Image (cartoon, rainbow, N blue to C red):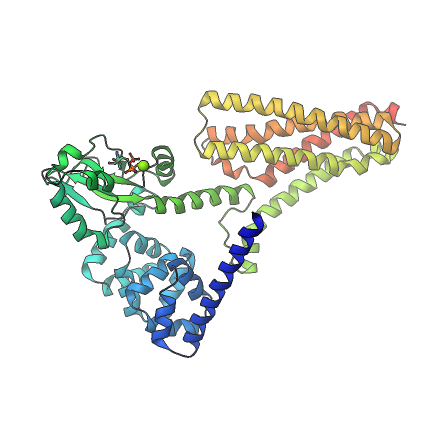
Length: 461
Ligand code: ATP
Ligand code: MG
């Protein structure tokens, strides 16, 4: 079965490569028609991959071969932070035309990445209708419903019949972001109902929209935060949600594809913070830029590390007497760090999904304590047995085993407690990042280990 699948994938890849080469050749030999035919045959996402793979000289050629409309499709599919550079290199008039062609919400996303001056200059060159709409959207705060919605939706009126509504849908379909939901408005443009394309298609010709529509509408307020909207999409499973102001006027819609981007953005933000990378780092940042973002954290951790080292120094005498203790320091500290990070990741995920009410947090902590006890006991016994056979020393095995057990319990608890406390204090829990927890757990586990060793010194010698 797998073999067939592999063969199929290989074949697909081969065809893809052949097509890619053909497009490349046409571009290389300046065969405009041939290029257009083959290039436009690709999926817009693949088009964008091809586009960013080209040299500047080839890209300049592509700008002249394609229409603004076709170029808009490519620009929408490129990673946002890279798009402004392309708009800077092309003829500004063309840039303005491309921005006018794309859905307003996508243009707003791109504008949000550009310098203010550039935004103003593009807005003055764009056609008035698109520019007005974008100016309107730009006023909404970043990361709210208003900033991610699009105003290209299909609206009908409740007094219309299905035939009339269908006619209107046909007229508006080319520009609408989705045609699957029709929102029903009253004379003041307030939303009073919704129906799906399926509902419309299966209805009799002379039925009135008001008899078809559903009046229990799920809508989001324009000021709602994008993370909460993502949650609503998960809960309700709609392909789009209407955005309204406080008087229920329909301002726009948010479609599920925009929400997928939001989910990715929020998740990668949380994970970057978890890894101690505060400002989001992009894979194509320069080495210097990447180092700049990571260094502050590493320096802090360096000092914490020095503190840990001086802590070990406190036990110099114990170490001098039983040097073999030193070889297990990395093991114990490492295990505590590992388990703490595991617990931290679970807690962060839960907190950012809004999974926990107060009771849920207590349940999480209890569960982590039990998990720590189980994993600690198992790891402790395993290492004690190994050390007994390896070093032939039952007390050393006992001390390392018990230390691992105690460290794992404490570290697991710390991994879930710290983010919950941070959340309570209204600090973003994702900044209780992995390296930080690791260092705290290093310190705790070393204290436990040497505390035990010093106490039972007499048995070890
Ligand atoms: P079904 O799942 O019932 O076969 P469907 O697949 O055609 O319907 P869905 O996306 O599942 O469409 O939507 C189900 C119903 O929810 C549709 O009849 C539609 O009118 C309604 N609906 C769509 N958007 C909203 C909304 N924002 N609030 C309330 N109801 C909505
Ligand atoms: Mg459905």
